[in-house]
Image (cartoon, rainbow, N blue to C red; front, side, top):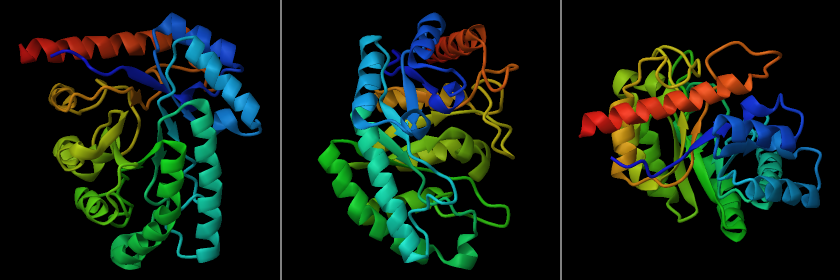
Length: 290
């Protein structure tokens, strides 16, 4: 098995660093070839500053393939309050523009940021509001030449959430299929939603439309964002599936390094160790396949 993709660091875990120059220096030391960006990097900056930042990373050989759109409770594209939903779509459209200016090709979008149970609130109500939002967001993405990637969600405390089941993504394909709409598979979320086979189940449903990955581990009962290999996910099987679809873009390791941090700032050695351990996991998979 030849690894056709590269790993990306999660930008949320890099916001403790003070400057682009400092992050680039870290990436070079730790062997980080790509970063999944987010609005923490672009907030408060004008278009020219964002483009300049993107050029700095590009010149340093660091790819900014994916960008995670905001996902607070105020960022819900399926809000049942129409005024709020419209405002969310407008704000996310602007954030998508910033991602495009950075040079990102994919924006990660949560189907909903609501934690309420679909059995109570009604799946079709969420789906209707999603349709209204995507009617604006997909054409915007097409114009910007980027792809929206819907991410699978965790279940709620009292039942399933919108986007937390594999069958939801089958419905999304049937209803919203478009060249500029794809999926992001979050392995940790899948491991909680469908137990030990979850990542593979979601993979099989999503595989034709996978444009991004959030690679993280856990114990199967909660979302703790462990570095791969520190939880219970079967990475050998999962990496083989990635190889089978010839995935050729950066896949985000959506975890911090496994170790202590100083005010959420992890040491360069900790980052280097995490990316070296990913190489060990890949080598193990390649050995087993042979």
